[in-house]
Image (cartoon, rainbow, N blue to C red; front, side, top):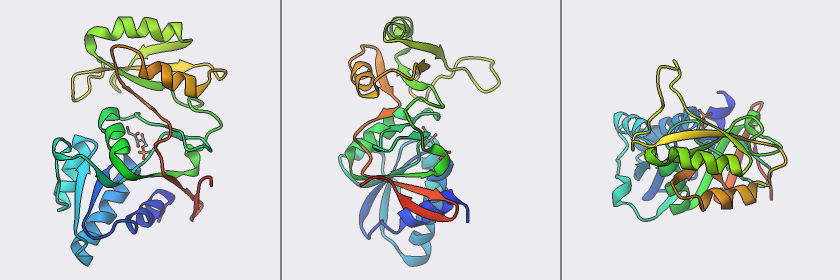
Length: 225
Ligand code: 5RP
């Protein structure tokens, strides 16, 4: 079992009968979906899942998990997802996928948000390895880009992997991947991005994670106090 599978199996043990559980997106979330489905099928665990993406919804359905749409959802008991970067105070950077909006909605709607990472995701500061994804209304991208530059960022519209066009999310929005200097205060940046017109959502998840489980060389550590 690799470290992602290890933390995913551990997190699945947190799911109790009758819970509503949010499913994240990405390779670590996939491990969790697989284990949750095993518990549902083999051990009769009664659970309802709400997905943060079309991709995870398809996987959950294929694996026989009872799915509820996010439109029908107010609160959930538990949300489990991965992250791209995590600092010691449990601030996250997410959104290398294209599902920021639903991911943050579920993180906020959950009584408990458990983040699963391997130790490669631990960083000294948010933005250390990846740009901050800023999802924008398509017609607003130039104005938002200008405002991101004023905040000290270097924004670039996200392009497809084979560079033949712009990435358009499942809701028709665009993503400005934005590099900020190491000197920027991440709490101030979070506040500034939350206040920018035209921004739908961004990848800084501050004050949302209840716990972060770190898989490190076959062992699990929990981050912070
Ligand atoms: C998607 C995310 C993912 O959780 C993040 O990219 C981590 O992915 P992985 O588990 O594949 O490393 O934020 O928007």
